[in-house]
Amino acid sequence: MTNSSKASSPSIYRRLFLPLGTILLLTLLLISFLMLENKPTLVELSVKVTRAGFEVLPPVHEEEDAGASDAATLTSIRRISLFPSSLQVRTLEVRDVDCVETTLDGVGPVGLQTEPGGSVEVRMDESFHPVLELNGPTSLAIGIAGRDKVSVALEQSRPSLAPPADVRPVMAGSAPDSLCTEPAVTDRGWTGSLQTGLAMALRLREVRGAGPAEASLAGSSPTEIHQVPWNAARFHIAGGRRDSEMRLALPHAAEPSTVLRVLDPATGEVSPPKNLPILLSEPRSVSWKDQLVLLEPEPVEARGVPLLRPDLKIRDLELARRVQLEAQSFVLEGEVRFPAKEKDSIKLEPGTFVSLTADPRHPLILRSLEVSGDSLDLLLWGEPTSLRTGPTPELRAERLPSYFEWLYTHRLGGLVYGTLAYVSALSLGLFKLLGWVKG
Image 1 (cartoon, rainbow, N blue to C red):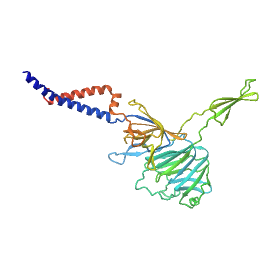
Image 2: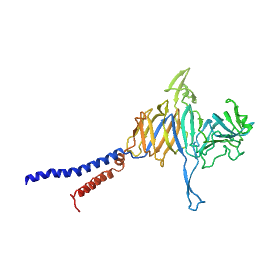
Image 3: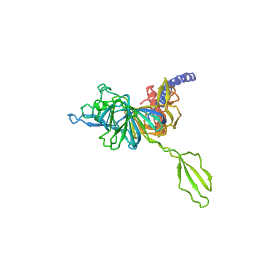
Image 4: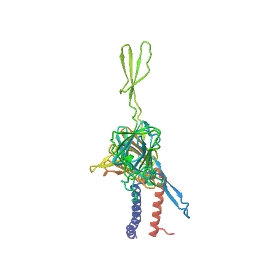
């Protein structure tokens, strides 16, 4: 009897080992999946860079086709203004554009196209606001081009049916296919304009046109200034058929100064303050004759200049490039934050390589892009499907939280009860399969 009991014990253990081992293995596989698989979640990226590239996506809307019997829904792209209304510039230079339409003193209305590498520079006596509208997805490369200067390169994918880049423009209104004609909303390309009613000066470099008036400007010296009268009908820029560039010179930022006051010890009177263009690190007092000169530094609060309108939808963010087969990061500093607190914030050191990938149906949101001194300040929101950072492109690591971390943060109770229910259901199923549980 005893020998029979001892002989059956190993058999019971062997029968228990199979279901328990299977339950343990499946549980470990599930936990591994939850810990290794990334969960898209809300991310806020605040970064200071010297250059940034991305593609801007204009808003789209759906409308019904009244001519179709089934009222088909059509998707069209709406124009989007790129620059905020608060942006003021001292000069504007456009390079490699399709057409510039304006009026020149002594010449009359002209429609000009720049040669490859050519440009049109606009200056006014006072700061002015440029308008730039995009009619389709446009890739931008924005970088610092000097003190208070910014470069904005524009590139659009060109359909095979687009006119060739070397088509010569003609006078506005002289032909129905004039390159200076403002495109329809559904067309690709981009357009720009400046406020008329103010006298402006142009510098032309390597331009051409169709009429004899424009031909007389083809040999203009870059130092020659052409005046645009204050009563010019319009100043219109068209682009999109080739890669173009805009260079904006922003108003000079206020610099720190020193406040000078003179105190008369005998009467206690203090003279009105005067600002001196010198910089002091701390207040000072100097005796001069029978008076006391007080010098107090007046720091200026550094404020960024908004360059792009807020809440733009973007994709394909690039914060690095290849220079002579070597990767170069544009990141100066920054921080990655998780508003839902799935993970701690991640500090970005100078030279960090950052890459973000998002679902095309849910692009990233560029909350703001500001020019701050010799750098650009970007603030992005979104739910990327991948967020990788590292000291080199090869050593970048995934920073998004795993499903396990996300569940632990947002659904801790559900994670615990779900695990218990999963193990219980799996155990019951195996026991029934082995015939240990009936009914």
